[in-house]
Length: 131
View 1 (cartoon, rainbow, N blue to C red):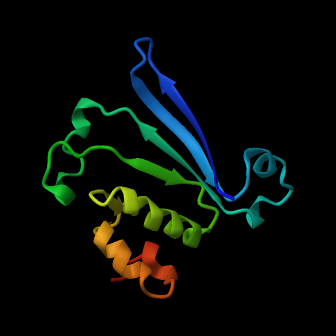
View 2 (view 1 turned 135 degrees about the horizontal axis):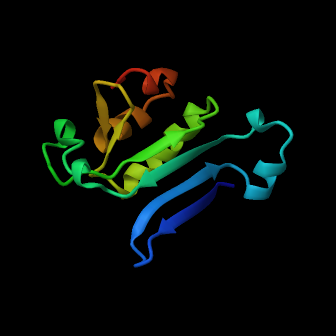
C-alpha cells in the first residue's frame, strides 16, 4: 500500500501558496504510531509558490525561462530505492520533467530514468548519474 498525505496552503483568494506531504508505504495512522519508523519506507516533500525570481531557476537545465516548479524531497530515511520506484512511476505521467539532486551538476530526464529502470537497481543512482 502506498499513501499520500498532502496539506495545501491557499491564500485568501484561494491561490496556491505551498504544499507539504508524505508518501509512505503504509497509511498515516500506521506511520505515526509505528515504534520503529526506520522499518517503514517514506519520504516527505514540499512544493512552494513560484516567486518572481523563480522563473529562470532551472534555465541551466531546460533552457526555458518558464520552467520553475520544484518538489523538495526530504526525510528520505535512507530509502532511495523507494524514491527510485516512485520516480519511475512519476515519469510515466510526466515525461517532460527532470530529476535534479540539490548541489549535483547533473540531472536525469524521463528517458534516462526509463533506461536505468531496464537494468537491475543501482544504489548509486542518487549520488552519481548512472546511465
